[in-house]
Image 1 (cartoon, rainbow, N blue to C red):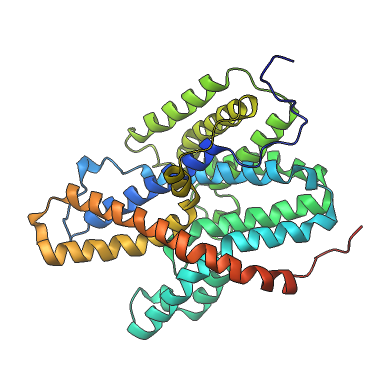
Image 2 (image 1 turned 135 degrees about the vertical axis):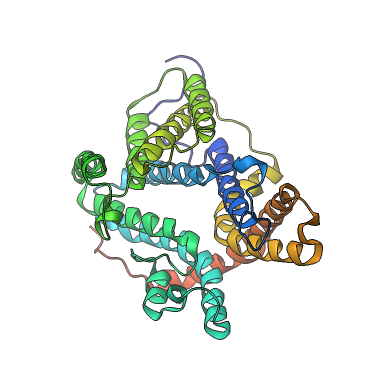
Length: 361
């Protein structure tokens, strides 16, 4: 085996530094997308800043989904077919998603109930309950960006099936992917629940699982080139106006480039583990989930303050930059002060009350 290459069957590093940084960049892309849309509203600046440069930046979600499929599969590959390990997996996923999410959702629900704010669906009791548990829902959840978390939870549940019943069940993934493509070619205007289960966003998760299986089999040649092509292609597609008019085309374009980047980055770090990220970049990457959750509230609050104090005397371009900085700082603060504390407080309760779903074998 060439010098510097790791044995593909050895225990892999559980944390890839560049992927952690990429997660933070993807979160900021979503921030810029939403900031641009808020600034363009008639009540604020009425036009998108930077000539609508950020119109496709919501595709940071594609990177999140591909990465999620890869990370879960990579970290729990040896758990497949081991039912006794399912409870530990469920506890970890619960702690990762729900406490930080509820830390924002419950105050938001209370605010809407008291103030009468939000739209009718955000004050609907059924939608509130579905939003709390991140259950698939034809309406947007109370916290709008949480629609992506319903896909995450569905994927986590599906992966639980793989852990309990074994790797053979993963054979459902290729026909599922084919069904998604066929459905959108011949019947693109689907209604719920078909629109959820056959959403092209599921292709991102399936792609992430395929990456983990590929890298588990051995090494991939030219990792730097693959990572470079993936990153360059991803950002090149950002400049293609209308690329997401067809949801399937958008997911195939950005999802495939995200997959190439993840393959190349992981393979490169497997062969030659990188040094730890500088502390500020490590915190930036680690706070990506907190940033994703809290940024819509910070963006709208910052925009309202700017518009009331300065009006339109400040250019929309400056407004969006100030909003993005405020969101980034708010996300880091929520991660350091609230998210980690909520997880620490909830962990003992989870250990006591989330019982194993299967008996130890």
